[in-house]
View 1 (cartoon, rainbow, N blue to C red):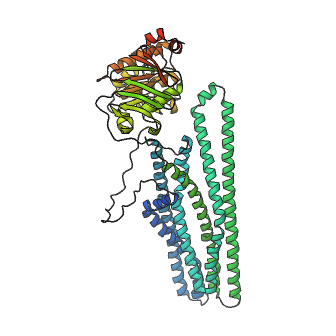
View 2 (cartoon, helix red, strand yellow; view 1 turned 120 degrees about the vertical axis):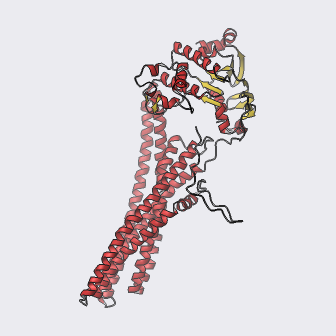
View 3 (cartoon, one colour; view 1 turned 120 degrees about the horizontal axis):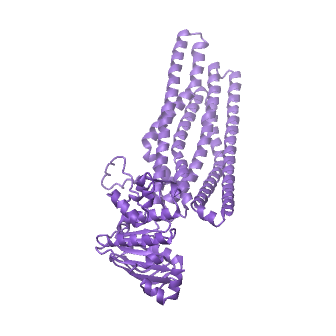
Length: 593
């Protein structure tokens, strides 16, 4: 897993004044949902500001439409003034032009800020997931995928929510001022009624937050389960467990569906409450205004203004309700995103480099199932390791790849004479390459999967394929090295995938190469060819590379300088393959069965 370099800053920032606190790092992980929200607005402030200003201008222009109509009636229609009517019509044309252009441009700025923030959050989530130090969020791979896609997009809706909320608040203020100008008691009634209405609508918003969070969590769980099942589909088919796996996924999908339906029901109920409360409130305003007109307190134009503003007020009032829904949904997703971004590192690497001698040394190492393991691997050596418990092999590979938690390791593990916990990850992984049994190939071509090292020409790729007994994959196909590789290498057999992965490791040509069961999916003849090819490739390296093979393959172990046998996590015997076959019955049974 490779580290992802942080994105460069968009522009150089001004230096703070002496004694001033340092400016917040825009790339730093937010410590809370509130911090994420604040950072979202800060790093999109230009587009958010332009969007808010233009959307607010649109709302002002829309609120002034009934005012303009009422004034036209009082100033031009009732007195029959044609000149005043022409001026009013021209003003209405300007007003509608501003209204249309302000919304079009403001919505574009707001949408751009939202999409930009969604992209930045997706990049941050991917960077955290791909960090070579790992993370301990407790989220499975499918859940991380859901957080990096769906939750990142939902959390970015803070931009849209803030832009819309400010715009509708401006619309309500302008409407209230206009109503106060027409009649003070009527304006005060609106000014008191709207906040009271919004306060009452806050209670169902909390339910929406809970339902939205449950929906995202169950959807992420179903995605994680689907990812696991798809990756292990061949195994499930082989052991006849497809129906059990399908039943598990149906249950997870049903839970996700129930949560989604619950969230949709809460949203629908909330919208219904907002609409009903708004309609009732506006009916009261219109009724009071009509009564005042009948009593002569309002002119015809003022009545039109009041009724028009009351009808217009339905939109910003409902908009505030929808903004509350947006905030609730964004908060639920932001909580999951913050959990991932603030997850502690799985590893805490050092900063030292390897010594000139890339030897590997384990001295009295205890880790997981391993107990007091001593193992030496010098440059130019090929050492085999036979484990009677697969867990011992997994623990050894975790140690050598640098994935082991240093707090759980006892004893000394050193590479090039430097303890692994003091090595930088780049130094460790530039020296030791662990090619695990379940190595992944990627969609593309054979060439793109093999060319992992800069300057690896076609001859080098073919040499690696020959050493891995995989030359037939090129010679037997019309496109050669440009032969297509499907997603998850589905168009290759298990043996072909295994050989390509081995060839890729040989192309990388690390000082220390660790192989885990590299020949389990090939026949005996191919296995022998691979053993010869790998040995020759590693011996031909200048300087000679150290190779550790964790396997029970007699062809590979026979070429090892020595074989270390691990039984119940401890070193049981050490010797050559031939000697162990003769002297250790358990070894012979494990290798030659």
